[in-house]
Every structure is written in C-alpha cells, then in structure tokens.
Length: 310
Image 1 (cartoon, rainbow, N blue to C red):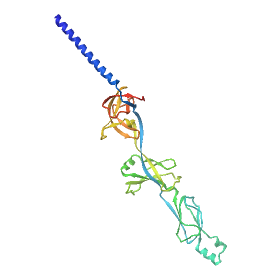
Image 2 (cartoon, rainbow, N blue to C red):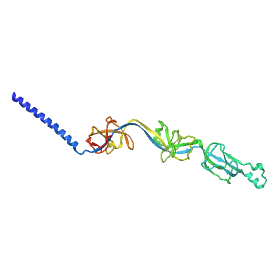
Image 3 (cartoon, helix red, strand yellow):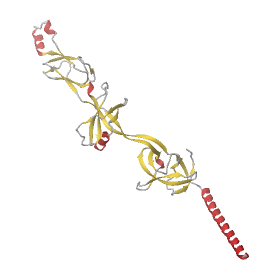
Image 4 (cartoon, rainbow, N blue to C red):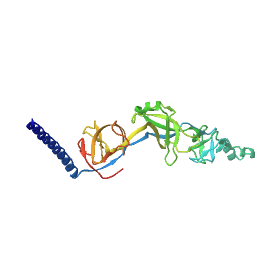
C-alpha cells in the first residue's frame, strides 16, 4: 500500500509539472509574438448620426408667357423709349409712330397744327421685361408690324429635367431647392410635368415656380437640389476602414479587441460618401475602435501596434 501511495504521489507531481510547463510555453510563445515588430495601424471610433442625401437635376430659367407690341396702322417710327433688357411698367409709353397720312399732309404743306400733334403712341398694358426691339427710329412699319417682344414679368419659372428612373421620388416629396449662379438658393416645389421628353438625355421637364420679383435672364443654367433620402441614427466609419474581397461581394472591418489584438468583423454597406461609409453590424458600436489604416491583408486575428489614439 505504501508503494502504491508513493507511485500516486509521484504521478501527480509529474502531471502538475507537465501542466505548468505547457502554460509557461504558451505564455512564452505569446510574449515572443508581441515582441516581434508589429504592424503599425491607425484607429477611429464609428460615429452615430443623421445624414440627408441629395440628388441634383439640371434646370434652366424660362418665361412661360411673352407679349408682342405691334403697330396699329402704317407709319414711321419716330421715337423708341425702350432698349433690350429694360423693365417695362404698366401704361408706359414704348413707341411713337407717325401715320402715313400725316406724312403725306406734311409734304403737301396743308398740315394743320391739330394734325401735327396727332401721333400714334404705343403703350404697355402690363409689367414685362424687354426681350427684343424689332425696329429703330425712322423705320417704316405696316399695320400689325412687330415693334418689340417682351417677357411677362410674373411668368418666370425654373424648368427641372428629371430622369425617368427618378420620377418615382417626386411622388414622395416634391420640395426642392433652386440654385441660381451668383445668387441665393430658392426653396420651391416640383409643380407639374411638361409632356415633352428629351430624347437624348431621357428626362422629363417639370415646372418649378420662382418668386415673381426675381429678375434673371431666360435660359440660364440652374441646379435643382432634391432630398433623395434621410438616414437617421446611422453608423458611419471612415471609408478607408472598409475591406472587401476581389468581387466586392463581402465587406468587413478590423475591430480592436484590446490594445494589441484586431479581429475581423463582417459588415453590410449602406450609403457611401467620399470620406465615410454607412455600415451595419451587431458587433460594432460607437465605443469600439476600427482600423482605418494598415489593415490590408490581415488575417481574422492579428496583433498590431496602434500609433494614434482617437
């Protein structure tokens, strides 16, 4: 019995020694790994936030209505009171014409003082913006001859050209922002479509009202900004933190498990911007750290050295 007890004690001592040797070897191996030159990485925290995603459409300024000023009788233009680009007020004199009959009487010497003052003055009937002057002083015009054209001042709109594949967006929200070069942006809405499609760009024009007191040239290039989507409480990380396979069908990030160990975490990609990307994963939170530089080619678990602390 004594011999058996001694053998059991000796075996127990051997087992304990072997276990202690194994643990020591593992600790030594881990220590040796950490003593090797570790890849330097930079890290950052994911950020929670809201984002508004915009899309932009091309547009132009356009006056939907115009007015023509014409001669009521044959005569000679003696006075022109407007020039191209001039604003026109209601009841403003625009042209004075001397009738043909009056010219004939002047040549015969039988013109009375009363007839001398009989001139045909063309007045405006509404506020407008002069577009084109068709005559000059001394010109002879026929009855109904065109004297000038003008845009009706309150008919200014923006025409936004919406691609057909984006038309469904307008059913959800019609608000937009009209961006005018060298002027402030104007809030407005997509009012109604014009049923004339552009065969080249495959877009449909929409009327977008503008303020009646706005004065800009027709056919000016505009940009129409539209809210495509709103992201609320999204998780965003730097674009450089996202890794992928060759086909870009799988995406992941390297998350710091502690100060020296990084592990691979699969993510789903959402919105992508120039510097940041929206990701979703149950294993990433704003308190975590993800590698933003130096993670390319790392295995699922890697030892690293952080060179920045954010």
